[in-house]
Image (cartoon, rainbow, N blue to C red; front, top):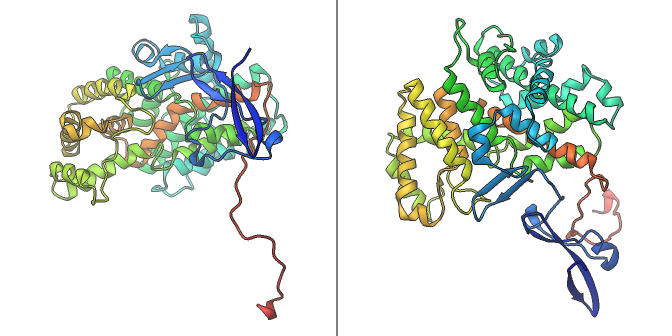
Amino acid sequence: MSEKVNLSYCGNEYQLPVIKGSENELGIDISKFRAESKMITLDTGFGNTGSCQSSITFLNGEEGILRYRGYPIEQLSESASFEEVSFLLLKGELPNKEELQRFKKLIGEYNSIPEGLIESIKTFPKDAHPMGVLSSCLSMMPAYYPEYIKKTDLCDEEMVQNIAQIMGQMKSILSTFYRHSKGEANVSSDSSLGFAADFLHMLLSKDGKDVPEEVSKAFDTLLVLHADHEQNCSASAVRVVGSSKVNLFATVSAGVNALWGPIHGGANQAVLEMLEAIQQDGGDYEKYILKAKDKNDPFRLMGFGHRVYKKFDPRARIIKKACDTILEKLGVEDPLLDIAKGLEKVALEDPYFVDRQLYPNVDFYSGIIYRALGIPTNMFTCMFALGRAPGWMAQWQEMRRDPSFKISRPRQIYTGRKARNFVDIESR
């Protein structure tokens, strides 16, 4: 017999089923509560609300655990490529050699974008924010692939094809705009390279030279770490927008827009902007450590601590190694990175930060990596979007396959004026 929670109000008793997850997480099923009681639950920011049951990602912030389909992020980042992890998120299992090759080939078939879209990208100002360009281009894609507008219910094969298409074409959209912003000619995709290496090839190669293999591998690791993170703001946006049965291009565009925000995916850009502000003020990072400790000072360190993780972010431990690899391989000399290293050292050792779990998070290290690669600050969040896209689409796919699927429609508690009569303008 399933467990239930009893709730009483005004003499009425309500029994709410308890849902237990595979990792023994507990939740209370309130799906029928309004119909029975005429009441709703209120949870601003949805911090205590489960919007779905999902088998994709397990996150335990108290213990610092992150797993994709049961596999620890530490093992996947060490041994699996971004394409393997993307396949895992979408299919539920790691691919064998043949499956991986087919998946890579499918993505490779979409490593270019329509000529009309290329021309549209060239009409954007060179200093336009790339996240706005990416979102706009994704929204424009159905104009070139109208079949995805006409058919809102896709079979499994069509879902995978649409997902692979977006993965491949996001690379091309971002590299095309980046080259446009620099006044440089496009670089075609190299199908012999892996996803991460090919993207860096399209983005950064000069005079036929690509970034070192160790750097491409570290970037691949970064994409793996970003691939999914449970029901965060952008994943929830994808599920809500996708629940209207709009096409996947528009759905992913919604995820891009949600990720753009400075307290979500835009945090890695905010980290570098903070470092630049410290540098412009003389480079004394210890001064800013004191400001961060002063409760009366509005300044706060960007890239430290995490809303969900109460211990060290497991992704940050991994990305720190990737960061060290890239900095060593590229031999970068950059005063901003010296400031970042100083802040990192203090945050890992100072009792004020240690006691409050204000450790460097994934955004802190990813910003440093992108800076070292020479990627402009306003492109940082796009790198995040590129990695997160497979997770968004896995969440969308899971939702669309759910037998209980229905359009998202939250409720509210109305706090406005009560009913009143209209007054003619002459009498107001």
